[in-house]
Amino acid sequence: MVLGSGAGLALGVLLVYLQPWLGSISCNSLPVYAAVNESVTFHPSSHMPFQEILWKKQKNKVIEWENSEFKAFPPFKGRVNLDPVSGNLTIFNLTSSDEDEYEIESPSITSTNKFSLYVIEPIPSLTLTCTLTDQNIIVQCEILEHYDSHPELLKYSWDCPSDQCKNNSAPEMHFDRESDHSQKIQCTVSNKVSKRTSSIILATCFPSAGVSRGRFPLLLSVAFVGALVSSLSFFCLAKSRR
Ligand SMILES: *[C@@H]1O[C@H](CO)[C@@H](O)[C@H](O)[C@H]1NC(C)=O
Ligand SMILES: *[C@@H]1O[C@H](CO)[C@@H](O)[C@H](O)[C@H]1NC(C)=O
Ligand SMILES: *[C@@H]1O[C@H](CO)[C@@H](O)[C@H](O)[C@H]1NC(C)=O
Ligand SMILES: *[C@@H]1O[C@H](CO)[C@@H](O)[C@H](O)[C@H]1NC(C)=O
Image (cartoon, rainbow, N blue to C red; front, side, top):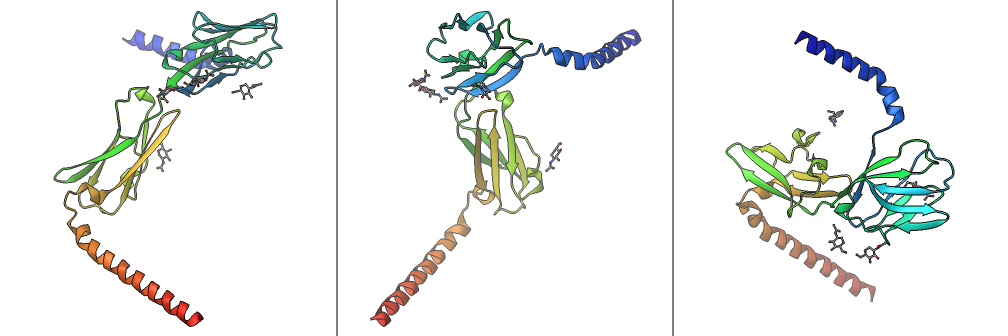
């Protein structure tokens, strides 16, 4: 046990020591996020002028540039573009099956250039639903329709006058039943490619809308009197102008 933790510590120290060196050889691939149907560009860093280029998706060829000729391979034929000066590879009309690791191969490349592509569906619309318990109003922020495109990338955030909305990343929010019912609760859900927002007034969580129903005719009559007064004054003004 003691030996085990000692070895673990030594390994930890070694890794910390090696960290800058491991970072500079950059064997890790760079994560790149893009939306379905959109396009993505991989931009190779540190290279000399290219004589030939091969872009690969794992072991499969995507596009090749050799003797000033381009050759694209299925399923990328007709939806890839390669710029031989920058080495940039652009893929159009992305589908979820394009999600993979991509790499450029060329004698002119001076360090490994690997990209991990994540193809993500934009978030569909949101809905806020409330549940009333004895003490609480629970507001739940849900994505409409069945959505399962990289749920680990979803981020929730809230905006409301109450303190619990600050820095809260849970998909649901609890309010005291006694809290201000006139406050507006806003939920925002985002991933790397899209963002959706929805909001409700806490009062709408309560089924009996008796108060607002009582006020409605009053508001209407105020509006009616207002309209009457302004049309009368317009009438008088028009008359006095003659
Ligand atoms: C992508 O495009 C196809 C065909 O135009 C369409 O059916 C599909 O709904 C689009 N998907 C998204 C997420 O926009
Ligand atoms: C290559 O791609 C990068 C990143 O998308 C972009 O900033 C740059 O302008 C591109 N260069 C060319 C020549 O297209
Ligand atoms: C992308 O898809 C749309 C419709 O699905 C099509 O009209 C368009 O030509 C495609 N673009 C490319 C570059 O393949
Ligand atoms: C939210 O939390 C992060 C980290 O926990 C902190 O750095 C930040 O200042 C907080 N923001 C607010 C508005 O409290």
